[in-house]
Image (cartoon, rainbow over all chains, first blue to last red; front, side):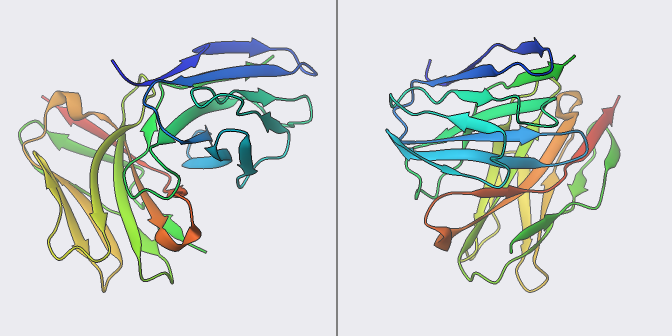
Length: 114
Length: 116
């Protein structure tokens, strides 16, 4: 079945460590996104990519980095510079960045900093 | 800047009854789209329904309908004949067409609890 796979589902990290969240899609979508969700808040955009080898910062990009070397993959690295990284992270995709259709989401990765 | 407001942190409804989840939005862009997503406790975001700003009729998808009142800038989700499986968080989101890419701005969500 086509969809978006995020891994790991749960991740624990010590302060000062970088961690990478995986996002893979087999929908043949051009555009991919990373959102962060905190309790009591909506989703906030971290980074997005409209096409391979291209990505732009979203609203809360500080302390995060991404890459888009393959169409199917859009990994997110949470760096030690991110002051409050404990959150639920959602990866999404859509057929094209300018399409009017809905975003498809993965099941999310929950990161806890110990 | 565009903004989505969901004023109901939580809603309760009995099984088989209808419920309305409120959403108001603010944008200066004449062309926009409104989405509703459901987030069960498992975490994934499930697309429910979409309404374009130029759509003449309210969107419907099965038991879901969107009560779109453009002048009031509201896009309320109506769930008819609630089921226990409808218990979840519900998010309203808006996309401005002229941003050049599909950036969705989300509200803070409403938690719906359906009781037997």
